[in-house]
Length: 230
Image (cartoon, rainbow, N blue to C red):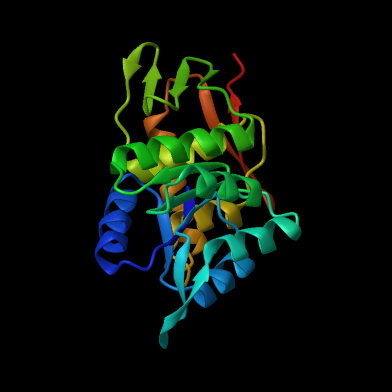
């Protein structure tokens, strides 16, 4: 997944960045309202992790801005990116305000990183209309368990390859553009070159050999996951 993390606590931001990256996600981070607003406007994300109490800019720690302002603005623009609010503001009325502003879920601090990741996966599955399990040929993807099986045997994939497979199978039969896949694998200022993406897909194809599922290249369009014909 491509995630926008909006968190002004440098220690917490660093811990979350490392945890999300280790899980195979590509994360762009913002520590203030101005940076978060810019990133969200210019980049498409699978999900946003949003703190509510933020500095308005990096140069000014005084004058806190509300993440709810940004959330309301993006919802007014018909942006439907799933948003998980993370905040120490955990009173019932504040949770209601966050949900009414357009948040999809709400998690009070302190929290467990494993729960953050589980809630993110659930939000993105719902937004994509994806099932917990997808079967193509003998290839079974278990999103909730984060497992891949071929004919009942588990195939262990690096986190980033697992995320790409999820993208290609959400749902299967959907053409995924090279640009979209590159965005999943790249940092905001470091786009993945076409030849690097093709090498990445080539490695994944080899691991799926014999599964009855294949990744087809559609020239000029992108990639398509499909069942192999006998």
